[in-house]
Image 1: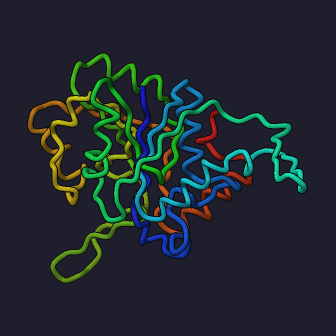
Image 2: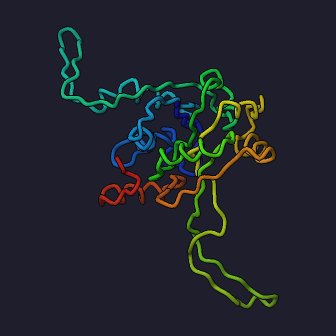
Image 3: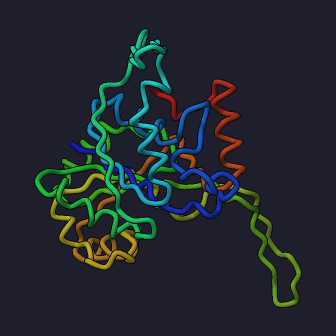
Length: 256
């Protein structure tokens, strides 16, 4: 089963980093966040990846083309220019990199990858969030219900405390930060190839506002509730927090 990763967005809320690199290449513990996401799948045996590129896709292409040079020791023969990779244990991954356009919305990115996905079920996720989600259980749940699509959902923590006032602006109730009342989409989809028929040909239509509501209307979208760790990298504070967790040995998403 292929794993599709959406990695082409502009990442404007993390502009301190994304002025020069795409958000999936922002590092946690010295490796791009996309590597951490791929490790989550690979530990469960899902190693056939398709990455939807857009903004600064050249950086992602170069990372994978030069993967051995980033991760391994090597010897250079200066007389001949020959390079010998030594002392290297590289992951056995197959990575397909697809240019889906700099400004294409998520639905359009998936639309441009249809040729690779039309014959069998596949997984889909975003290239900017890490989780300790149990991929085997997610796939098992998807296969059990017989619907076309499964979306992983999560009860997030509210970033801010809540205040309720009366008509005189007197505070009558305060609530500290806690679990949100609603679940949110965190990606980690499992999709049947028929889902591709729910896409629009419009490259500006987000997957979340186009195909997903159409699937809901047909009763074909199921929720897999994730109760463990999940953290997106939306702003600079998120990057610092994820790196602190990694450096302290408390990176709960690191289950490999």
